[in-house]
Length: 324
Image (cartoon, rainbow, N blue to C red; front, side):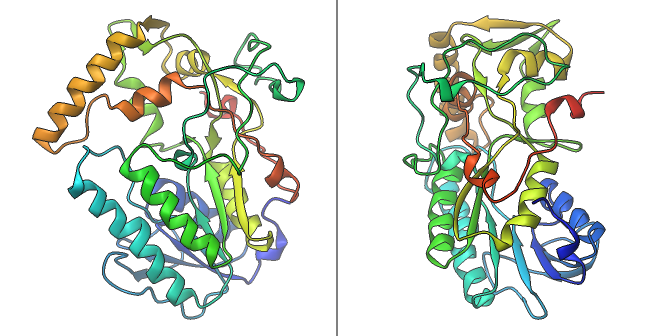
């Protein structure tokens, strides 16, 4: 079931509560009656605050019943050893410190669908791959042939420092008996990642996107928060977390930005991504268009969420709820 009265009086520590997802989880836990402690480098929106630098110290988890771990090094950094080491220090070494301090307490470790190896581009015609109904604000239907939904046993193979270190960190958590959640492209009010990236693709009165339209999964931040606060009682293991509908990339972008989409040839955008990545090596800044971002925009990724549903979790939000 979604977060409920069972949280009343529970002492929940939320790491990364000053961030987008962590802040929503902390507020939802407090609203459900839990006693919330926000753990990280900066205070969260509710509850008590305890400082923790994941790269340096063990966290203080005294008087904690349940831990929800959302603190992470995120982004699409320039390639190289420096970025890899920085992400490893938080997402892997920081997890080791968290697990040592947790001492067997229930732990929900929030990962990402970025840990998965890219799926095959060949579509499946299996009836089970048909999408759920689209939200009413997003018209038309998806093609009948969709890629096979990605299950939790899909091979791992993150393409970036973020994906690789999240995969390594979640393996430590799984080995310790944690519940691992894998959302994809989390969005919602205050989203600092998905919509800003889309708006960078605006040129004039059009949005430039590579290749043809594709089906994809997205995760409303409220759906992720519900899963975070319900899953501490689930059996240990990995669970995909996404909205119920399968969306269309172009309709999502048009609905969010209010502009039509113009398709660019994939070879052209691959060349642009290669140049952008090369420039990022010199400037040590996040590339304007990375190979990873290109893959995200051109590869159909649909998550199978049946495992989380089998635990009673139901995604209650869709992208239509986010639109003005």
